[in-house]
Amino acid sequence: MQLLIQQSKLIQTSLQALTLGIFLSLVAFIASAEEEEFVEGKDYRLVETEVQEELAKDKAAADADASDDADADADTNNKIKVVEFFNYACPHCYSLEPIIKEWLEEKEDDVQFVREAVPLRNAWVPLARAFYIAEEFDVTADVHDTLFRAIFEYNLNMQRKDLLEQLFVKKGVESEEFNKAYSSEKVYNSLRATQSRMRLLGLKGTPAIVVDEKYVVDTELADGHERMFEIVEYLVDKVRIQKKEASQADPSQSTNSVGSSTD
Image 1 (spheres, rainbow, N blue to C red):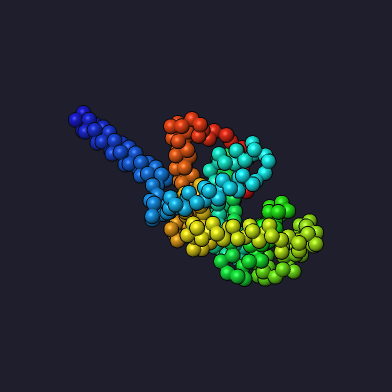
Image 2 (cartoon, rainbow, N blue to C red):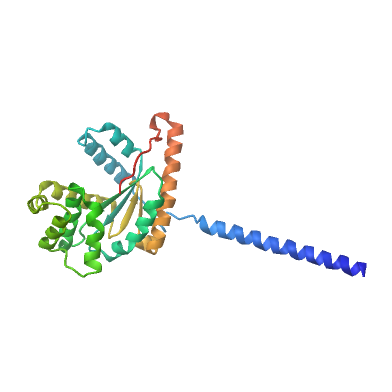
């Protein structure tokens, strides 16, 4: 009888050890899945060095002509810049919006998010103009969601200038000011500059996300909207490590400054 009891205890101990082993293997598998290593050329692509250098030159020239707020400019320059190229008429861009909003709530303070509106078709030009007009009058937060909903939930033809004018008037922009901005050189130049950057980066469609002007993520590479910002976050971490290593190698390149994000 004592022998049977000992054998029973031995079997029980063995089963517990086996169960623990299976549990630990499962935990390791889940952790590995959560820390997926994304692959350059498959999940995202690297912007060519020549293009990075050209973008850096354009940025330096823009900074030289920019605002007088040197502290704000320095703080912005120290951030990891994530840029979404989009258009209000793009259904994929509309589908990506909830994911962007969720990501914005969780992103770190050293990340700056920027949108750039590009018209892939001539008919989309008025909608791209609307974005830059909203930026000029600081009503983007009021206009952005409304414009998307008007197009995709209410099927309104928001490419019509008169409907855009009504929208902006409701958001507090005077009709005369809207019309002046609509045909202004400033809005035209913003539109042309974004189109130029899109061509330079080799972007073929929207939405496309560019991280720190080094890495490109689009729906085709990411294989879906949900996965896009998983890859973006991976690339943000990658850039953060690169910046830290660069600052350690050259203290004058330190990027410790942190400020508010741009949405």
